[in-house]
Length: 339
Image (cartoon, rainbow, N blue to C red; front, side, top):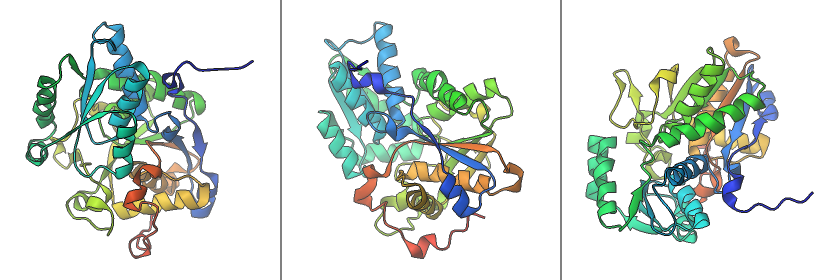
């Protein structure tokens, strides 16, 4: 029987979970790694899930409709691309405030989906980095003041962000592993993915270990790789240190589901990305590489022998080719020893 979909919005979710068997063999891993390949979503990242959930839940509550509402968000990229794609598919105008430094590919995708791109003043961004997440609010309010019938999707504090991953991503991982997952690894970003997935998995199996990967603070402050803006960690900040959570932690984030925070260097991230490309034919983005690097470290531990480790891999590397993400840098990567 044939199958014709009515909209790309029907294609969100049910992304594949793939075990990296050649990588396991090449590195002599003791644990198993199965990556959740979120770039199989129609707009190319795990943010498709939250964009669709936020829009459709707001529609269900009667808060928005294509004939009267303009969607508004301030984002560095993937959430914006997903919102722009689904706004177009559903007939909504979409305005996005975009911070400088976003890869050329992501900017062009936003243009392709007919998003109205609003430049963000450097002074406004400086305030964000000084005050933290709370400084996003006045930026979005300013957009709303300039947008008749505007509706802010508020990705950092919208509970529908968490709901998307609790209702869908978590159950997919649980079902596809037959409940045999032992360790889940993800980043913070907007806070919803790790909170939603972690909450669901721990409700099903309390001893599932949830690990947060975050960039090494030194790499954020001091670029280490020529040709990659901000050492590859542009716009991404650690949210946890010896003093606990900090001002960059989004409201959506649920620390109660987290067992461990691990910093990862950009050199380790690059190494993981290039190993995955070499042995599995899979090219992922930097946030994916960071979670994969943590997964490799965990899989090398004797205590994790035979355990199933699932890193969430948000997008692929094609969105960062202008940053030369595909280029192997021996001077940096040869110093990395995951063991």
